[in-house]
Image 1 (cartoon, helix red, strand yellow):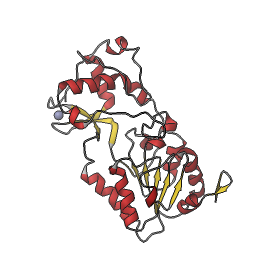
Image 2 (cartoon, helix red, strand yellow):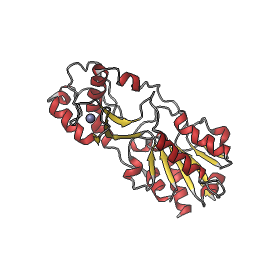
Image 3 (cartoon, helix red, strand yellow):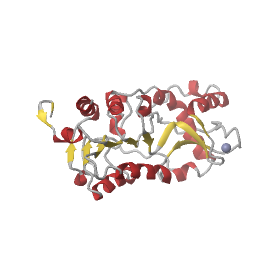
Image 4 (spheres, protein in one colour):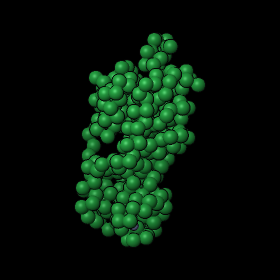
Length: 273
Ligand SMILES: [Zn+2]
């Protein structure tokens, strides 16, 4: 089996048999969402869970920036890599991305390990609502805010450089008045247990099959994803990694391909279909 005219044993390994995928930020870079852990990327310090729940000032800072950045984030669309994943017939697609692009590409059986930025949860009553609905409430509560700050630079992932967020009004839960938070796992927060167990089960179900765990576009920097690679390796399930640059799972991989995901996954979808 060849890719760009060369033998690719990794492609051959994934060509048949059940697949469980673990995808990360590298998959969405071709959709214009930058991977801040990728090679040459600047260091970033996103707001931690502890900071977010520390009080109204932190929440004001978070939502004021999010209000300005949302329009950019919501414009992102699935790329060739997402479309290829949707066509692979994988047993499960575990994604570390919060952008919802696997779902938008029509991938069945997706677990958003770290949640989705398009969902909102109330920290008091746990009711979930949509980010789109909240955007309207943010606009209504802060008329003119977006126009006043139109010159603020919005990064491609929707984050913005904005220091002065004094005076920004943060809407509360419409049911109970509780604090609203994006339904994503912040740094310093754990992935909900049932979600983790569902992913472990899918990996473990590969035992005794000719399947493998395919990691695409993740440097496996955080343990929330790396643990599935470790479990697969412990159980003798082959691990294939496709990523630009080194990953923390390279030592455990049967095959490692240092390349972009859109092209490689498209080639895989072609041989599997
Ligand atoms: Zn509530």
